[in-house]
Image 1: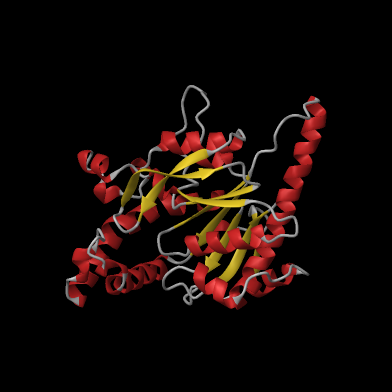
Image 2: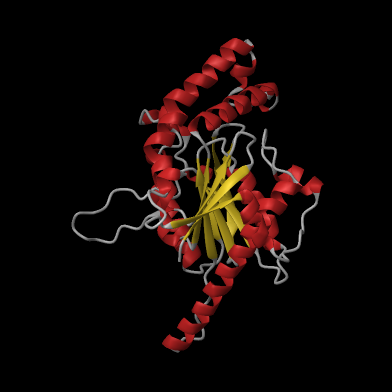
Length: 319
């Protein structure tokens, strides 16, 4: 992450090796078991109990400090405005990064760790997949090969959802996505009812969009975040992980006749790999370079992974 730190003097981040970072765990207890970690991790993701101890317990402790500070500030604002009836809004954690880099595992592990704090907060997790435009609309607008790019999402629905959460509304609904059918599920929703913490995960959640020239307020998704995390790795490593995951899915989920990608399971290994390489080069790599990676420096914390898919370095934004 040298490009994030042109000089030690001017970098907005502090950098820690994984070993240094692990020391910040202090007395944070381990509340997950090995079987639970295996259940939470994504396909081809080697995260285990040792990685949770090494990286995620320290992160849980840091987030706990941020949530407590947010709650204190809220109480001070209540007193300032003499408005004790105002409801505390959820603390929102955004998680961004490329496909196949391990965002989903990070989000699920954090959800379980945060929910097991002594205060037993209510923690919910939402992914941006459900806010993708339906395939019918993507096809109509020739956007199927840009699925996952910023213009393939219902940005209005995303902003309405996050605005409802930050306004402490009850029963805010998020659309549901099926990875089996590779499409939004019509009429199916996940309801979020005033959690203490909401984890919001997606490849482009830190995307700023176009700034208005007339000074009007144009909200971005990240405007609603209290803390943002970016999962990072070298481009070639993500490429390898993507291909390996695709080939593994070809032997598992793609074999389901109802799967959108079932046809790939019928191909030879060489033909399937060629398809995977094409999807990576023409869609995912392009999206990474044009939209995802440019948002990395907007995060509050960056988890940098090495060849073994485990975190090697942590960058934390200075206060």
